[in-house]
Image (cartoon, rainbow, N blue to C red; front, side, top):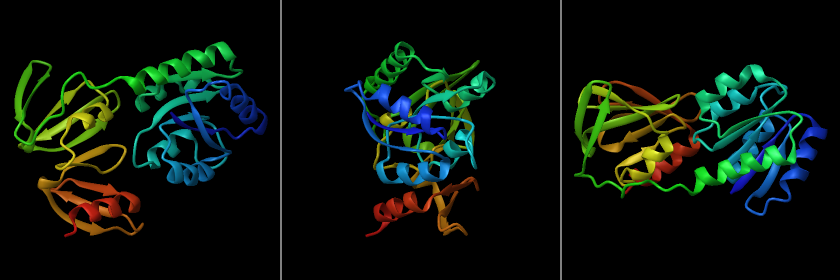
Length: 235
């Protein structure tokens, strides 16, 4: 797994890198001391796994994750237990309290590899496929082409379709693997959109794009993802 370490303490950063060096399953692409350095490193390598400190100068670890346009696997590394509950909002693989032992780190790495190797239990869906969603007492049989967009909501995904919505208790990345890539586009860490249900696309002030869906929902796309989307939509 392509991996990046983000830790503001030089001693802790070097110590973690040293412990990770014995794992042949991880490819360590680099390290960063703060969110600003991390963003450049992440944009360059698009790592699959982040070892992420929470309290750092400037933006903290949560703010860094909120600014990303995709959702890598996360293992938090921190000296503070008080952030543990909030870490669940980011579907963290693990939450390591410093000082970190080699044995505890090995457990986290095994968890990350297990998540990474898990494959969807069903085959990919087609444009004409229908999916069944049971949300509480309500049941929905939905045509894939009727799904407008999907929104990550903590440990659930909210699926919007035909003026309605329903919740699925799965991570967004798992649903992304099943959706037809010719129809759906990963707009950001939080959203997947159906290109058939896009009403307008306009440039935003930060050089990204604002996509308005048919139900008037506005979804922001980063400049990087906007370029990828433009290449897909251009003749």
